[in-house]
Length: 516
Ligand SMILES: *[C@@H]1O[C@H](CO)[C@@H](O)[C@H](O)[C@H]1NC(C)=O
Image (cartoon, rainbow, N blue to C red):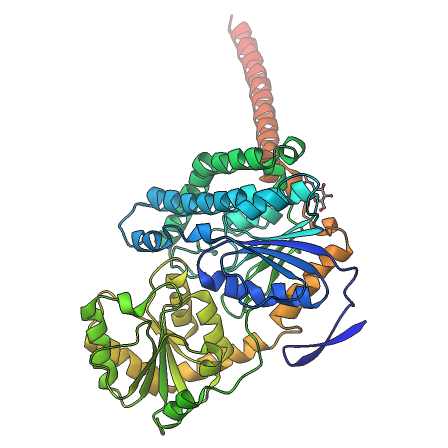
């Protein structure tokens, strides 16, 4: 056994077995997805594994055992795509849009020069384990068949119907809302209808329109492997799926044994001192404390409509607290004295600061997890994807409130901030959530490393896979059994009726005979 220091805790992980060659595929262009997994990939490298990472945010300094394959192609049109998300769409179009986005990313990976030169030709690089971002990108799961290696999926937002299929997990639609629906686990009848319809449409759209496209890509770029393994067998054969989720952050639910919760994988528990000017600004807030405002890395505060910005500035100016605003320009005209702007803030260290009273956030999952970890109440201003859900959960759990940033008035904004700062139950609930979240046998990062090496130690850990993965649709849902039972019952019913009819008919004819 090897004793190592991770995350400030003394933990015992089994000694790293023979170092493995690991291929990681995380091409998503939004920075928070990669921020979520990079500490995990770096820890694998520090434990002696050779990590090759296909990603859009290569390391600035070279790192031992770590090779980047940068994939800048994924940024083509990224801003237009983010803006297009605000256009009105029906749910079929919405699914088309999202699925096409992932098909494009998948194609960018498989057509990248370094990938085509060093990974795809047979007999070049070799890998013992593939780790992928499991996001409707089936074609690049083909690396597992290509290198004949087990495959692990990571999802940065928890599971959904598509990720469930990789390991045969089940998410009952009655209490597991679609990530994009903005519902909680307790749904009204109407919400359950909507959840059912939305999930079915999402499933059909992927199956009918985009999975065929993924299959074409798979066959084109993995011509040899695709003759051996069908994509539909490959994508039901994941050794492990790691979820950036935890029941203390969302809600309790069931998972198959090879689906593991590692919510907050990215959180480093080593608080660092804040830069001097920031610390002084925070200390200068006196008893009133500080509000931290950041819309994350995708939405830019500077791109907010001028009128919305003005409303926020006026509100902040009227508050007794000081405000830290992540703002991506050097100048903010009309900035009041109690507001400090910066293009970047050491977010975890700010949230850890005792004088910080409130986090005004877009409600991204990483930010939400960080605020829970540090026990801070949130005011959510969601923009897209799972953000509505995260804000709703914060409200349901009682450590936050939400507003619509497009329609809120200055009074509403100010009133909500005041409630969250003044009413003690929000801070108390946030602290309680933090205590529950932190009370785990291993840190999320250690848990992820443990299970990853478990897959390596047990050659793909095939024994964790549920048998349901090998059943067809009818057998899986016991429709064949129901059919057989129903058929049997119908048969018995028919026979009984015939017999009854015969007896009755026989009686009748006897009676008739007697009468005659
Ligand atoms: C599924 O994974 C196991 C373990 O990694 C491997 O032995 C098997 O060949 C895989 N099957 C398919 C169809 O990919």
